Length: 162
Image (tube, rainbow, N blue to C red; front, side, top):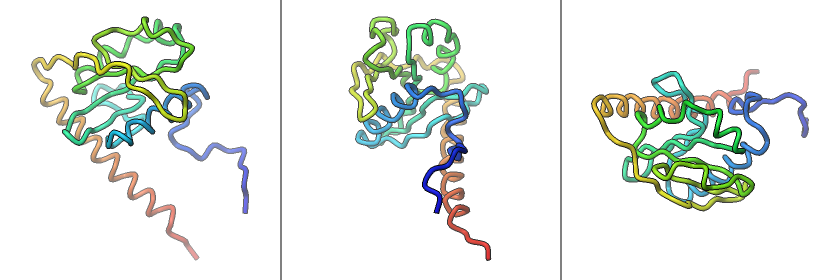
């Protein structure tokens, strides 16, 4: 039985995520699971963008969490304002080496150490303008499809062909 593989078999790691980003994601996911959120990483949005994390709360709120691992990472990213159309709350997640004051106050903020995270701010929520209901509905359907696909992938992995 192989214990170590030189090949990456995780479809959620495609080479775009740094080790530090994966650490932030892991800690943030732990907290979100403790908060009883259903969490999906790397989910495509209706706009064609991809959310680092998207969650569905027990209350039915859709949250998008954008992971930022450096000041430069935040500065060069101009796509995150578009994410507001797809969620009820937009958050950033980062680690202790990134100054928290660079993040906009209207967005929520998580601080992660890889073993857990703290919610520093919930933010103001996203404005719900014209078309938000249809976009949000499409996003909820995408979440359901992704979760259903996860279940089917688990079944495929357990099927043995003889």
